[in-house]
Length: 197
Length: 177
Image (cartoon, rainbow over all chains, first blue to last red; front, side, top):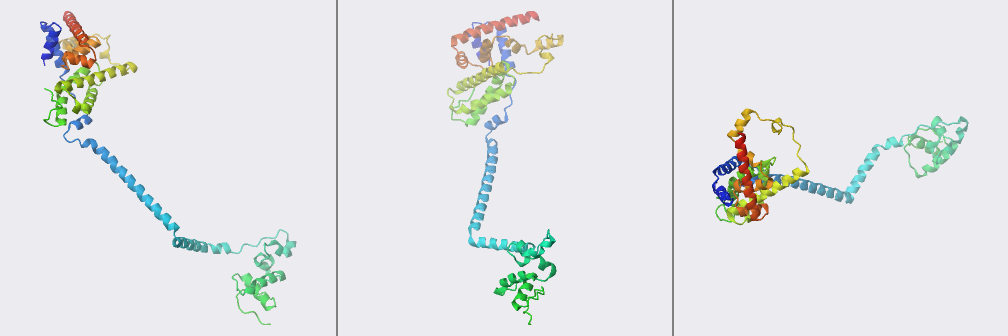
């Protein structure tokens, strides 16, 4: 491209300076000899199908849609669980399950506690006063000897007027003896008929 | 000849690619002649800026050339301002030390080629910009004034002084040799 150089020299009234003309031509040749490499972004702009430039956006979109789908699934599951918990049938079923679990642990809860050791052996006859309601299980004397005390029998007899057989051995033995009026107190608790006199 | 962006022949991508092939070496040479540290990256940046407005350029091929070097000139000004604020730290290179004296072999190689751009570095900033825009970019007097945002008269004065300075540097070089 010598035309701009000639024009430049004419405008500067140096058109006859051939040395300067050659120097300017050499500057142009050296400056434009190297051809730069376009960057990947610029190459994508000059390619016929600049699809590659949009691929990362597609990846991000698919990832975002997966996240949205996951959130929707979790939300639906949460709503289903809430609706099920609000249903009376489900609540009754859950209650039955809890009762069954509690029944498994019931024997351990109803197991007879070890008899408390009296701090003062001389006060053993005051046992009914130590229990919360004067019940048979609170009678340390009956547990130790198998013979019910008179005060304990009276209380147990009053409890057995309903005819219930009871489940614990101590309760049954005491109750039957009182109904017969003999008060023998075998302590067997088998629920059989009262012995005849 | 540069493609006219407003022409109907070919797609916009084809016209932009043709403009890149024609102008990219000149933009690279213009940025190199002014000491940009990474002229290839700056050249890519110039054409990315050109692509954003390419379809709206008026004036045909001359308009594309003028706009391209207007962007390049703006990048050059930004580079010099950034360098003035934060000078770039470079490791010491013995070959770049100005106190170093060239060997006889290096002097002979320099005489064979590569001295023209070195002479251009001896000009002042404004004179070097005018001469490089006229010679390397191939812009006219009016286009150079438009790119540098100066009057045509001042550009004409700068180019004349720049050419005289180049002539003097060349004469001094000949005496030294």
